[in-house]
Length: 368
Image 1: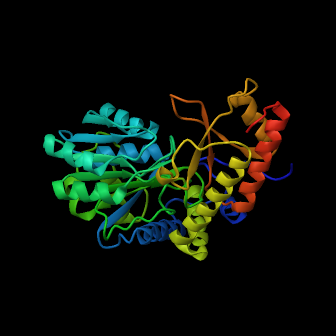
Image 2: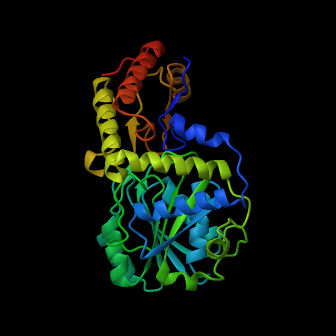
Image 3: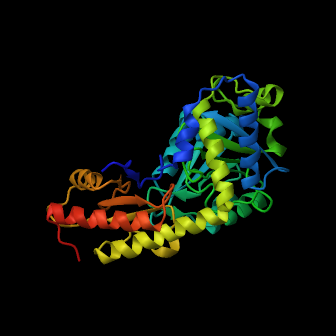
């Protein structure tokens, strides 16, 4: 097969040729042309969440988790108390990094097959007034659950608590409107639904809390307040930026806007999801989640119970047919995951289903 493998993962994603080609030029990090690219990207990101009046956006080198850690350290005072609404693997990661940074952390666990509950959060905040901040994973890709951002934000606002949103796998695809949804920080990354390449995250911080963030972080490189102040003064990144990643993101955003922005991106991903679920059902595969709980980002499927099934062999065989799948993240049941995002459409999803059918045949696994 002469084309690149298609990545059916929650990131990195399959990217367009235009995005790849944008990385062929070298850039000087202090050069006026690159400073202009950084400014353009920041402006476009704020436009996506309608946050021009209420928020600033601070880019940061590294994977998305770097930015989650940086956001918590920057926004939460050292004597703060964070409540993590936990219904999956990435919620647990947020709890761990919060604890490692020395912040008091309470983790409220709930079923990974269901969205977290805003009414339960309401009760938890009423019971413990020492809680200062809540962390929500918007789309928990451990299982693919969509959590209720607006309802959680409304509860936090009513109680006067700060909300930190990990929107890593939702930003750019699912609607997020800073004019109606209050959050202190919201984190996403270049290599997700904007269909750039991995290597940088970005954090939206509410202007009203910005001054209070000074001195919170115990890290030099990951202090978003200092990063913001330096960028505002100079237009530059404090430390060496991922220049090729930034320029690729600028190109990906141009394509995002030309496609029709967030509504168009969501429509394509939803069409991908429907093609995938319908095709996999024809092969006898059942999704782990009820459709009402499912985001059209990544789908967790129950693995075959056939004795010939082994994920590594299943993965390698599907790879030979041109598609990279993703292992399951659940502990109770054997699963695998298939992403619906990236520079792909329903035709590629139907091809992926055909590749799975060929894989089953090759491995001698009868489904149904």
